[in-house]
Image (cartoon, rainbow, N blue to C red; front, side):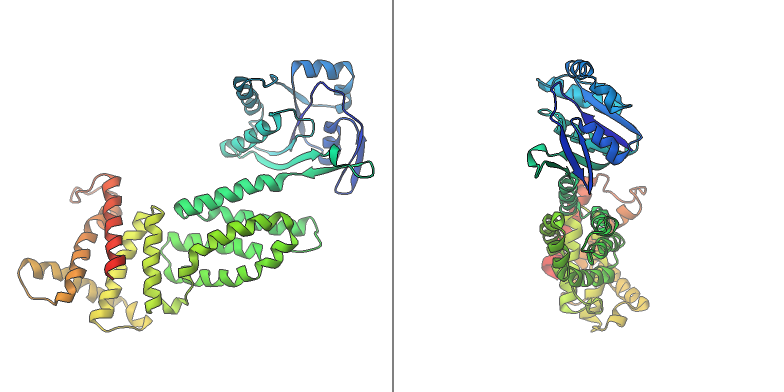
Length: 395
């Protein structure tokens, strides 16, 4: 574990710091950091002026072993970027990190946190704690040490929601929810979470179901999540840092309202509408291959329902019967080209079926077959979006 602290040039007041029942009396928070977390390596950020002042007071020797990062004051934007670059140069190791902002000055704490978020993406530097000795919050001469990590977690939560709303990626939710759930046990909190881990697992399952076009799983998991969400209030009420997550989850969960049907009802009127919503979901989230794949199967299903008079689940998923429907749909084009009669009601099926062939095959052949004329992603996306829009309005 690596700790990163900050020192200025001033003389700090002695305080009795308390964190998770342990008290340490000192004027230098890096001493507290060592006592509480026993990091393998400690870095201290300070200016040349601050280093000189603390050396003259003999304070640097009291801290013990550490590595210095000499930084500029940060009076200009260029100096702030220099601080950021110095941190990233020194903190390249993939490890667990603690950031101490107790003695931070001006923009130093926010630059430190920005650096850790950047390094997390770059080389999996894992920020575990953001500690702050809140001298101004002392009670009965005891100064509390706050871990501000839950507030940084809000950024990750918000980003996960943004990713979901933008492209349907729900993978970020599982770790967030499972970690909050586990924390209530690892820290032996009075209240132990009941639903958070399960909902996190459901999000992962739902992601996999969407990515592999498992309609029945999507519907089934969505129904199960509705029951879990109903029991989530107790978890949120008993863990105050998780309350903002409820707002984000509600926004996310509302997107699945139309998918909450019994998976055996997949071919009922309600189920047909849910399939159309799923097609729309794929298009909105730029998942073009599953969109065109589902449209094709949707068209086969609707053809079987209208012209074979099939309504039962087992009939509509029967391989042989679906093959017959696909063959008939394929023959409609030949009939039209040779002026052979077919029912007027089938005209709209022919129009969509003919349009589907090119983009579906183009995608599934990875554009490695010159038989298919669409070469760019933009016209392909536009065509699939147009087809999906027709299906939603005409069927």
